[in-house]
Length: 128
Image 1: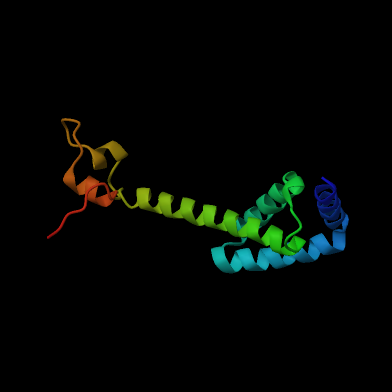
Image 2: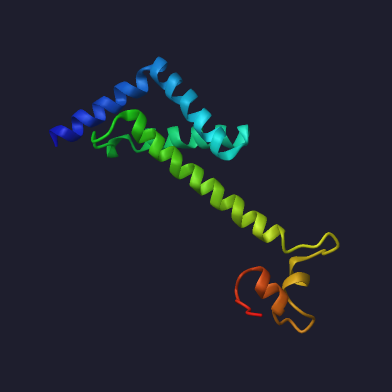
């Protein structure tokens, strides 16, 4: 219990050091921007990581440096954003410019899925 209290106190002091947080935040932003190539998404990822670290500061076990810990959280946030981006682009690729509704792309007039749509969303693997 004493170690947990010391670790929590250490994280509390790290968060209260505005100069340290400012430097770590700057480094986090550079890293996130390199990975995401989008300043807005990078800023969002940094903010989400810092909020998550602050909310879960009691789970910091002291096995790593504070900066390493928040960067690990940031890496997970970036992975979440990249996965979301991949899912969104996969769905948007289903639409033709003239398709009004996704159901037009995925289903035929009788309400059954089409082979083309199944291939596009990766539900069926077709071998030629």
